[in-house]
Image (cartoon, rainbow, N blue to C red):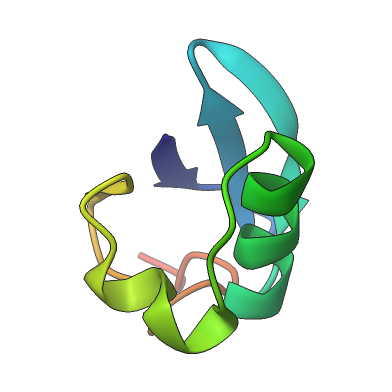
Length: 67
């Protein structure tokens, strides 16, 4: 799964190139993974080897700061 921050907040979540939705927190990420057939708790999201965080990690799911 790959994630890149959206300029408007959250991160687009992709699994195998398919966009599953926009996550605003780790609970959303865990739910997208559950829907894709992967069981993971929100507490395990940050350490998961399945997730390729782009830019910053799960602690920054909000909007991009102004330049």
